[in-house]
Length: 120
Image (cartoon, rainbow, N blue to C red; front, top):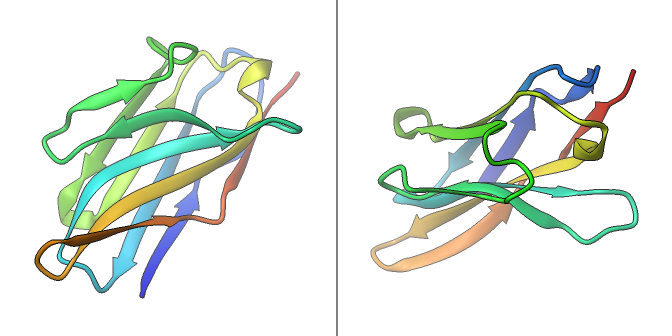
């Protein structure tokens, strides 16, 4: 079993910052890609940022230059530093981790989500 737990969401004013954290625990050999997704009310879930094993990152165009994803492999943790937040960043943010099971299999697990609200 693998558990994925996010933290760090909340209410922030436009222009403010938040840092999300996501820790994976359980039985696995390693972690491939770790990522953040978000789902706005009434919309489909979308990729925000991802980071692969050797710190190769990818960002949605809407957050480039404002958000930074990083990971601590020793802690099986991924972070999302969000700066210059806008009201349109309001969403439930989900963490996703792709873990290695055994020698060659892999599986994706999701966290429960954390609410980020940007409002004055």
